[in-house]
Image (cartoon, rainbow, N blue to C red; front, top):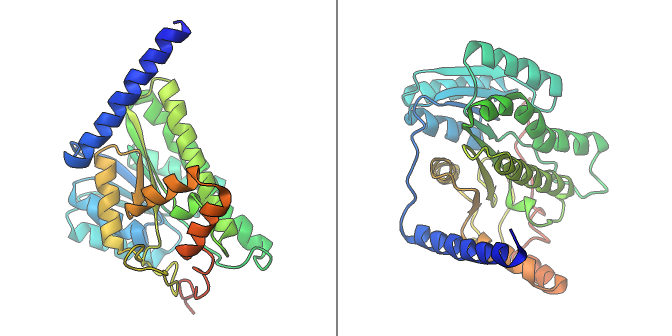
Length: 305
């Protein structure tokens, strides 16, 4: 195809996709049925992982729940069954360890079957300045928040490719789209998670595997205890988010094959501005919205005795 025809084709498709997006702002996208699908959720013992487990249970999905917290995992299983889950399977898995992921993944394939929807949700946060962050915690942050995604994709993506059917969900963060003080390792891990998920999405499209969908989730702070103590500067504009609300948005995005989900909606505007404004102007906005002092009151999830 020559340059002129290719350019015309791209312009026409750009206009079509823009119009399609505007229509979907008014008319809800159709939702796919996830009943009977095998949904694997990492970090399922608490927080967003538990909320997602319950919501997928109500939709009739077969649940595969991973975490290192056995007691929390048992409680999630109980709640999932109370909410209609017919099949729930839980496994103790340290997602930061590659071989552990591969071993448990093999167990899942034998005992449950091929995973259809993979939700990489497990995450940790250090909450210290870069200089004060111990090397071991920096490495752990990257292993859990980023490298675990590589190992779970390696384990479950081949079956999705073989059937051209599946959904890859990356629970990233708004901190994966801009830098925040005292979150250098966390931001780095979430930036990497976003880039990795986008790259795999493009790779699947280039292979013609259009039946494999990707949803990247970038929420602001969620009230799960992970960021306990953090106070947002303008709560009416950027509120600390309710886990139930976020989980409902994520499940809806998955069912509608939405590629990118930013919560709350104002983040779409802020990150669009970040991409076009001069650096000093973008930094000014970050300061205005509290990125410089967001973590000053950070305590984190209380450690059990």
